[in-house]
Image 1 (cartoon, helix red, strand yellow):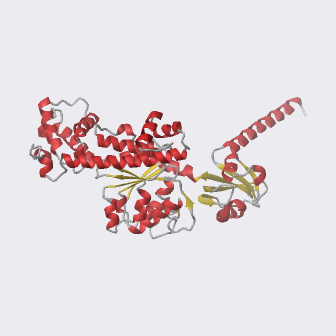
Image 2 (image 1 turned 30 degrees about the vertical axis):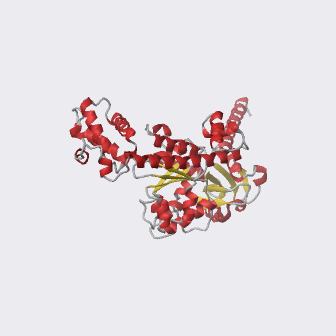
Image 3 (image 1 turned 180 degrees about the vertical axis):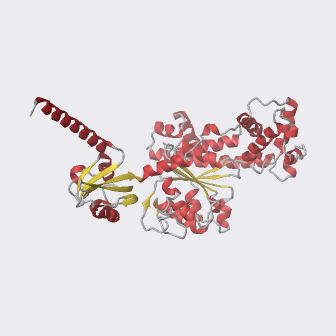
Length: 470
């Protein structure tokens, strides 16, 4: 053999060794789990991601049959090795290993030059990765923080203070308030400041889903579970919210039969899809909201008392806009700046608009005020903003300071009493949270202060006020 041929063969071998080392490196470090099996189903190679998912090393798994790991889903792999039929997106739920595994499987056979099946490769994708992708493209994330809540109102400041304390807790939260007061903004702000801020924020309007579909929406279903069920089934909102927060809006509209299922999930921290018998663990923080008096719904037999107590761990009442006179023009200017920067308005016109806005009852609260501002801007066009651009239902109001009393709304004394009651309730909840944190951190004031977002002297002052011993 000539020197030239020898050097050429040596160069080819080095190139093959390099390519082989690159392929091995890619296989071992790819983020997706991968297991290579031979024609008999015995495990030959396992990459690092699959070892981590299975909770076993290569040495522990090598030589064992893949059936020991795939449970009820082994028929798909067996068919792949016998007939060369690949498969994809098969759900796998295993318990009893060194760790629980919830993943999606895909399998591809590989053949020799003669076309004979020699084995296959099985890919595993953790279900939480699938959830993250679904949530990313479906917009399941929180967009608001406490900085987005515009207010100068003492009652709103009290609600924000309690919400910030709720953010450092893992307890369930019940938000009560009329439609349009900003309950979802509060829910998103609590999520954004919690330990789950990097997880999904999944919102469900219980009042907008037909009663016969709310179970499948929350808990998911399997293929063929009912007529019209999607091929391959569907993940429920609880699974999609795993690792994050599930916001159940209009919880008072949930049917009684589904309230039983919700209570069980909150107690046992797992769900069962419709049409399935498998138990799937979920790690979800639940925040609920209602525009009803939920306790009255309990007394009327429309809402379960045991579910009410389970949800109403931290109660936050968001006051209506008509009880926040100091916020009306503040919000008016805020929405105006968002819609049209630099829109001119005469001082006299502004004062007249202010009088009428503050005398209006605002049944739609902040949402209605935002709509009014948008309508006024569109009506004004390129001209200055004036009283004539107010909607007719507001312009027709008498500019009378006695309007609130004549329309049956709370007079100033009633508002004061309502604020006093709300302040007392918030103080009781703050006291309960403070006691819980002191117990959790064994009296470590620095840790408690950090969790509450205050300094040590504030914690000591509150302990003295609530007569709590260290």
